[in-house]
Length: 189
Image 1 (tube, helix red, strand yellow):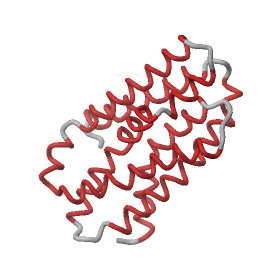
Image 2 (spheres, helix red, strand yellow):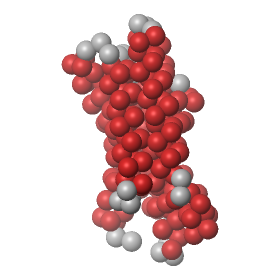
Image 3 (cartoon, one colour):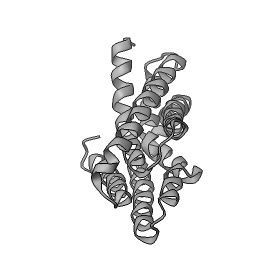
Image 4 (cartoon, helix red, strand yellow):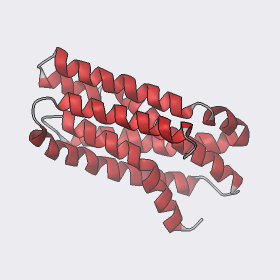
């Protein structure tokens, strides 16, 4: 596979994770490099591991996951988004809102939800009869870099969006979930 095609695939796969990273960056008022690293690492890791799982599973697993992957992504993103909105109304503590998007179960759910498409890409790699190790390295690294920058960008935009950053972040996550659902149910995936 051409390296430019692989980079294009990696960038395309990382777009959902980028949007969520920006939303997370908005939520964190006192951003530290370790926060951006943690979010970016989580998204990069899952974007790399899902194609490996898909590649190993092959065609059989693809027929099962393709039927409902969009529902899983929609559900996870909507639940996390609604939780973020609820937390912004429930608590005025900015530290609690910051921990919400850095909390392991929340970050895990977001990482899985944004990497389900990578699972299907991994299955397609199996049909190309290619080794998987270089593609997953490229996908993981590009996703990490894009998400790291996304968290920082979101954090810089945050002060300009007012006090209800949790609402903005939650709405972004829900919109991503709806977009994934619509793309798959309308046959445009």
